[in-house]
Length: 316
View 1: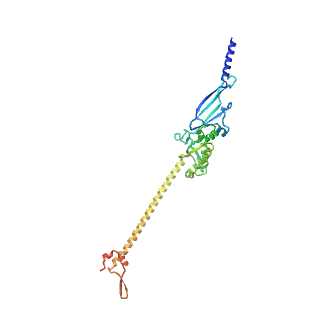
View 2 (view 1 turned 180 degrees about the vertical axis):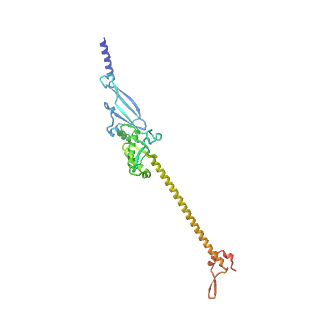
View 3 (view 1 turned 135 degrees about the horizontal axis):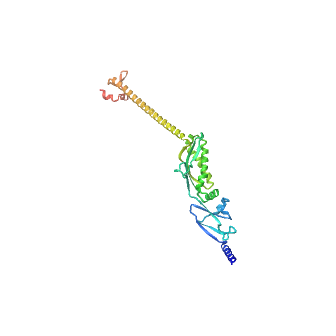
């Protein structure tokens, strides 16, 4: 009787296993507008694959539908797996194309991360310093999603920004700053960032990432505080020199203006003194030109030189 029970139990188990073998089930997933979905067919054990064969393969696996089904088949994974195990036939990979912004700075309150993510560099004379930077990036198109997925094996864009993108930004920045003195770096900040931005943008565009913003923030922080103190002192001295130069130029301009005014006044007074002396010596008679027996009055144009004194000394 006991043997019969054992045989019955085993038989039921075999029947159930045969019944469920080959059965499938489905699981539905909704794809959002900012997402690009890829449905990858899995061979046995394929769910553990770490990379994809090619961009062409991913382009073929891209799903246009907004609802995607993952199917499962029951498989017997071991001799003791009598009832079987549900195993996925395909794998859904979703790339999020939403823009991501990172702030790499020293302060935990001003940056994206609580750790120091500022960009460190040295000048030509080995003055160490660091700067904060802002970076925004996005996977714009579905074709970009293909490139991104092939390059980074389904990692998140934010992770790539904090690792590969930040590392390339720092490498470019360090390389460029090492060619200049500290004063030159301060003068050429825009030029240096343009070089960094161009290289980083072009490099990651080939990998499906569009860099929309990349720039410095929060100013320069020197590793040695005394450097900043010296720069501040020099800045104050330069401003004082500029103020003194402006004051000197103002004094010179004022002196020149006063000299010019005095000159005009002096010339005016000289002309008046000459006229006054002439009028004081004039007897009130018009001068005449004597030629032969005829005396000719001085023309009116000469008379006009006497000006208002005709009123004082009228000719009768």
